[in-house]
Image (cartoon, rainbow, N blue to C red; front, top):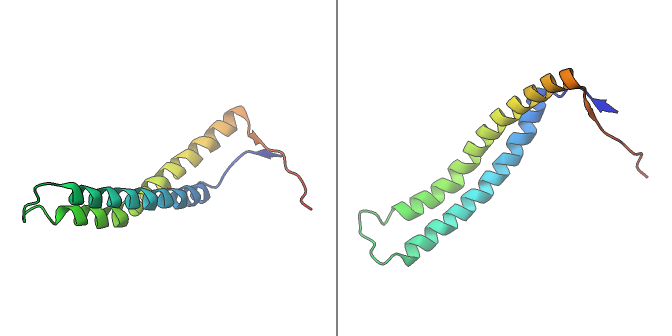
Length: 100
């Protein structure tokens, strides 16, 4: 079986969902690092004390959205490139097996 073409929007949806999950993981990690940074800081002035929690919550909210958008664009571009390259050099050969 040879894959000669992929649906560009289909690839973009799958890649964007995977990237959104990675963004959530990165946001949680960055949020934890922001909390550790606030906890370890020796000198927290009243002017900058809100930055740690702001970046922590902001990372959990913003990174999945940013990663989703970039994943969608990257998936669409990757699908388009695959279709054009497969048209030139042939498709992607896969081997399937019947399940039980």
